[in-house]
Amino acid sequence: HLKSAELKEEITRVLNANNPHAPKNLVRYSFKERVYKPVTAVDHLAVHFALEGNLLHKESDEARRLTIFQLPPGMSAIKNPGVLIWTTTPVEDGGESEETGDEDKPRSASSKRRKREAKITNQFNFSERAGQTRNNPSRERSCQTEPPPRITFSDSANQWEIYDAYLEKLQTQDSIEKKKKSTVEKKEDFDVKKKSLLDSGSEDVTQVAEVAKIIERIVIQNTMDDIAQDFKYFEDASDEFRDQEGTLLPLWTFQYEKARHLSVTALCWNNKYQDLFAVGLGSYDFGKQAGGMLLFFSLKNSAFPEHIYPTASGILCLDIHPQLSYLVAVGFYDGCVAVYNLKEQTRDPVYKSTASTGKHTDPVWQVRWQNDDMDNNHMFCSVSSDGRVVTWTLVKNELMSSDIIRLSVKGAPSDGSEDSQMTAVSHGTSLDFHKQIDYLFLVGTEEGKIYKCSKTYSSQFLETYDAHRMPVDTVKWNHFHPRIFISCSSDWNVKIWDHTIKTPMFTFDLGSPVGDVCWAPYSSTIFAAVTIDRKVHVFDLSINKFEGICHQIVVAKKIRLTHIEFNPIHPIIIVGDDRATVTSLKLSPNLRKKPKSKKGQELPKGSEAEVLKMDRLLALLREPELD
Image 1 (spheres, one colour):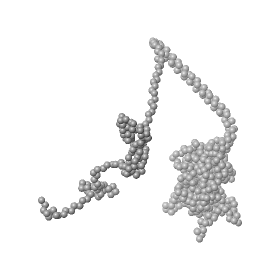
Image 2: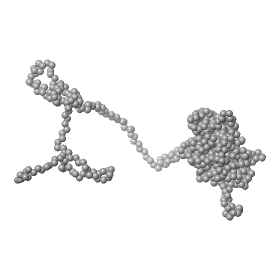
Image 3: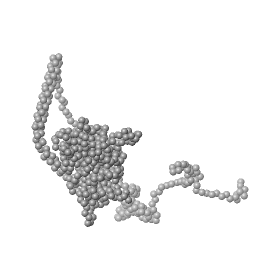
């Protein structure tokens, strides 16, 4: 029993809603911090009873929809406070309802119960449908065949019957072989007669060869009329908005199917027939030398060459005679030089060097025609990797050779005496003669040097230029200015020189090895170059002395450009690649602009204007030095 003091003692109890059975040591893994962290918030709610109801407020929209759409037929809704009641509609004739007997009361009650227990449809507008397909009637088919006829056969086989059967088979085989021999003999006789007919009719074919060639040109010009129209009349009007930059319009593509494995190693236009150009085919891959080809194409027929000359060795250079356009000098990989005559019907050269006449021992990299000698004999020069610059004279039926100069690289003397000075052969790679001074010429070498030489001084060089760090691929004099020449190399550079100065006047880095460069025949300040990254670069020094005015990709991927040439009169260039394809391109107006004359000032015309234009550029470069 508790005492009175203990009964009067107040004990305070604090009641809360915490669940005493809820765990207090829960932890969860935090993927962000990658550690287990305690859970501070624990759910203390304990559910003792839960029941989902379907009661609706009578004034809600859903209750109104149910009262309207789900009311059984014959029932009406009476609105009481908080309750929805359905009642049946009264019968119009009350007498009939009273007259019904006690037997009808249970039926009416059951019908009312059925009406009240009518199925309420889904609130999501559910519609129940059923269908049945028709089964196809089964059919049976049967057929009956007649049994094959049967024959009973019997015979006896003995030795002589077997022998007769073998003998008969051998006779049939002999007769078949005789028939085959007779058919072969008849076919051979037919082939002989056909060949004789063709041989006899060859004269008739040659008589219509020129007519057939003209018809072929007409057909091709009709099929490629859009290209011919572009070549003749199209001028790019967008040049007016390009700020002095220009574009190249692709025209014809020239290719010979049998030479696709070769590379274009030389290009040259015919000065007399300006639509005709020569293509030299060979290979720069010296481990894979498989012959070459000399082709002549015309702008009038891009589908097939005008002349085809297959060669045993790859062609590396060629030059067409400036006056006698039917003579073509060619240099080969095996060191030979040859002269082809287009008037001759044969495919062999009319002149060819041999070991006895002093042929080169290394590949011939350049040939250039010269003026005739005192006896009116035709002459041309060649340069080779063997270090020799040779003059070739066409005398009767053979080539006569004479060395102009032997290229050499002089090293430092070992002890100061002249006899101990060592000399090594310098390998020539390019050659060009001066346009006005016929005895002056330039030679580019594999060591990157350019030598200025003269025919009259065969013992020494007039000048040596340290031009490039790799072999000099091309060196060419300017068509108008007598002191300017250009050079290019695989060291990515194109340089313009004044032959009286040992340093270049202009240097352009094209960002890729340069294959070839050439001056424009209509301007002293315009030149074009090709690089192995498929681009053609056109420069005009009178417009921009630092950058080109056109850089355009002209061929597909994995193709390297090798050579480029300007047409003598038409505003087009031709570009060769390593797939034996030549592409012709038309220059836009910005690439062939002529200088405008100021008011009241008359500019000189012709070559004098071009020389004056280049002199102005050179004067701008020399002014700082004079100051």
